[in-house]
Image 1 (tube, rainbow, N blue to C red):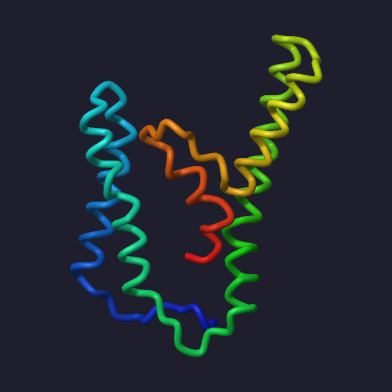
Image 2: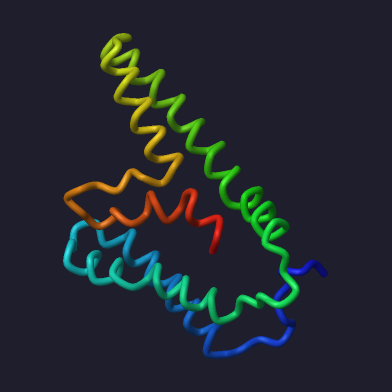
Length: 142
């Protein structure tokens, strides 16, 4: 296998922790009405995945350039493609609803650039404030 291949033996407590994390992700998405539960779950479910990833990550014999290119292709490119498609559809729908204007083009362009670069973190926080930056450019390194 490649340099980033995981060991074949399984560690039970890591599998259990990942399972709990997955259940919490589902519960967080289903808890639309209960904002307190959603905030509680969102406080730690993503850090749990990062923590587990760090435990099972094997850095031996990994060349940074090869690692970066692999992560860029597997994480950032799909993100950029789907984000672009999402913005294109949103742009077309916004033109149909509001008409074409310089303000609309500016707002959508600024929003797209902030999302694609991972700098679109709302100043007021909120439940998803960490998501847009984590999933984009910086996620290539995890």
